[in-house]
Length: 143
Image (tube, rainbow, N blue to C red; front, side, top):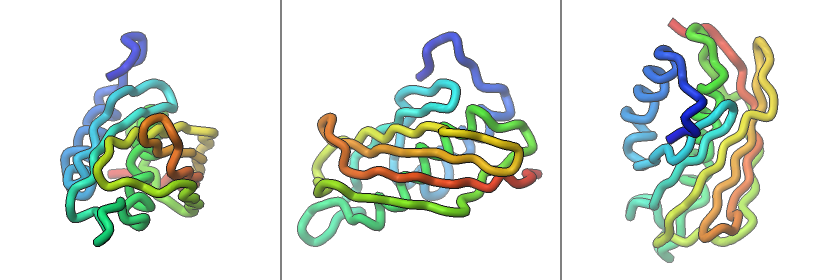
């Protein structure tokens, strides 16, 4: 999952495990393939419920899935008390999104400050980008 030289803190690992094994992330079936400082590579295959009547991935589903690699990449840089909350998102779909395909989701932290963070995500199928996202997160306190 990571390059061996990088290790999450126990708080980061617990936060990540909880986020990926509950709610929407668990339903999507997203898996972490690689994790490093400010970087995450995830994978998923669309469920039948995610498809349009024409058997393509619904764009609105992708609009929400890009949040997951953004969050996972950012977890690698969070302090124990920090929670990232989306405050702005820009999404561009550049190719049709097949329903019967494996997706690679690449999340990167562009910059993180004390109260804000900026990430980008690329979703690809067969090595070709289908969606780009830029996500701004507010960093708030976490219990």
